[in-house]
Length: 106
Length: 157
Length: 250
Image 1 (cartoon, rainbow over the protein chains, first blue to last red):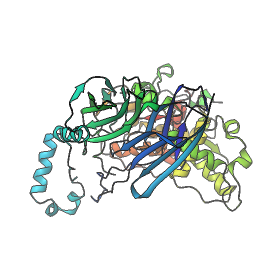
Image 2 (image 1 turned 60 degrees about the vertical axis):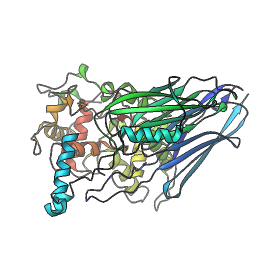
Image 3 (image 1 turned 90 degrees about the vertical axis):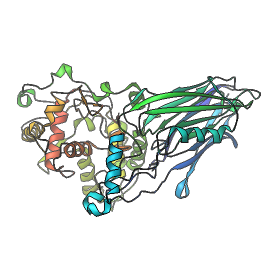
Image 4 (image 1 turned 180 degrees about the vertical axis):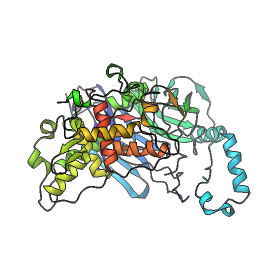
């Protein structure tokens, strides 16, 4: 499964506020659902999402089961320098997914 | 909703197991629900004893959601977002899901703009609350009501 | 090209062609926004996966779809909008899902993908995406007419414990509400689509089976002739409407 869909403008002007949109494939199982026979389906969610810009953390999200499946998170940052935006999602059952995107800042 | 709960309570009280395997597979054990009090407690955990001021933070939610499984939400706050004066965090809470917490977003001056969008689950028609934590230690809040006809969280697989 | 003379047999109560509306028009602003933005549409996760599967060698023949079909953007444009399509070897129309599996088995020497599997949804989502904006145009001629008629009969037949026919909701009561939801006209313009109820992408047949369960009828198996014929009829009923996959629906 293509795990993540990330949208970052490839180029930006120094000082410009850019919007970052992220979408990741994950069921975000709440832990409250039951099977047809009444058995519990254990919780399985992404708990933390972190974005770093050339190594410095610029955004962090702490998620709970109330976040919908295939979590969509959009936020912004100031384009300061060219480099790499790195994204990491971690969660239950050792879930860990990382992606990175290059950005050119003029 | 309350009519349904009392029927469930009655069935469970009269020995759900004894009523038969077939019925047992249909009885849904009702999960613990958050209450407005639980939400206040969750908010206090974040805010401590500080005063919560109304204003400065905005919640964008549809007043009627088509499906509680995926409700688009945008939480934003007015702030110059400078090193001296910025939004440190945006927290979202609810009052009727099984748990009161929804998410916490940590920002800072590098955000440029204090605005985060995501999609949440809502288990019932309810009030959603957003708390904004500023760099000067002040807290601001707002709330929005959402009518939910098709609930999340409570459906069987 | 659609041979109108053979196909047209309007029954009283059929929605006039000019009054046809996609389910998109009946959705809230927020859900429409989710569909419109390819950077935020959850269905695009499957489209991306489909793109990588398209280019991946598979099966005993060790062949990728791309090796025969090249760039999907060009070669697959319009294909999803023309399915179900007649397959001469099988002597009957096949859906896009079935076409993918026929190619896998016959040409890639790979096992068929299970209905509603991640991979099959991903490939069909990728293919469907290439038909976005293309007017739906299933070929109705001497070969496909009997299957269209069978599909039409299913659409108008009362079924299930609730004894309801599809047309009673979707021709006669579209736009009105059923248990808090607006009843759509039921045009398959956006499949496979991301349904908020499913929290996942799913096929038209999954939706049809869900509807059949809803009227307390025994749902036909995936790939059953009844479902394929009904799909053909629904696509014909939606002829000319623009394809909008992968759609988002409540």
